[in-house]
Image 1 (cartoon, helix red, strand yellow):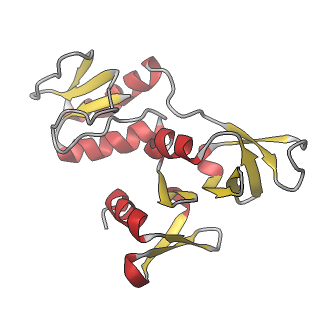
Image 2 (cartoon, rainbow, N blue to C red):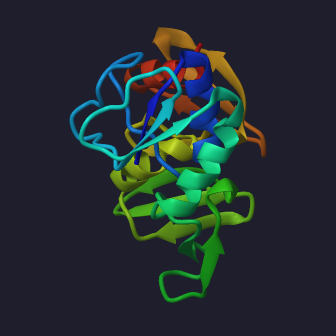
Length: 194
């Protein structure tokens, strides 16, 4: 996990690039604030002119060379979320063949009964981990919980429509709609800066 110590504009770019590289960013309580509890960083990326935090190794970089800093961090840190996951096709049951899924292929995760499914353009695949696992570990990849039983990949959301009672309806790129509950709609609005 990486802590960013830089200007807010650069922090947005770095967060996006680090997410693409599969490197999670430590959540902070605001601009230049220390990491929130449970968000301890292994490294810090520090823009020249900002003070490096104590307790973690830091990489100092010039704002024009921020992509080089991203490459250094991505090459030197253990991977965050896995590059791929495996799932059983819901049509084959739990004894069917495993399919390999990249995070970008997953439109959303859904809890149904006692199982968790990764929903893709090619169908639903039963996965082993919990929704909490995907919510915590994959948020840097653009996955956001929208209700008690679903986590959506923002890459596959085509439209967000305000709905009744402070809820939101997400129209997915591949068709279909998902509903963000009132409680989780606040988080979604913050994630997409609505």
